[in-house]
Image (cartoon, rainbow, N blue to C red):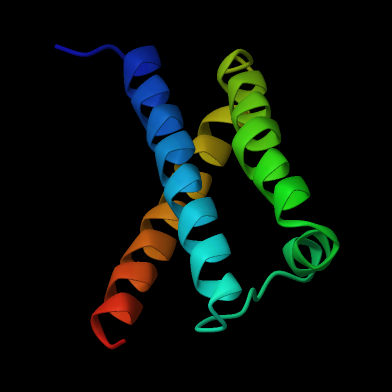
Length: 102
């Protein structure tokens, strides 16, 4: 049986994988003017450079996820991992539902 810490690391891994998928789809569909970014911070990064956006999504998000996972003893860490995972799951579902209508 999986212990509690392992389950949170699985959630953390899912966050990173879903984040990479989101980064790829965002850059691809915004470059082709099929979609637009709804997050104003990400919009600013995208307007500056797709490379800066990709760097943030592919380097910073995994680092922040690792920091949260390395601090699971803090009260906020476990709920944060769960909430972020749920947000990314909903985002990926949204992407695939949206892609099915294109």
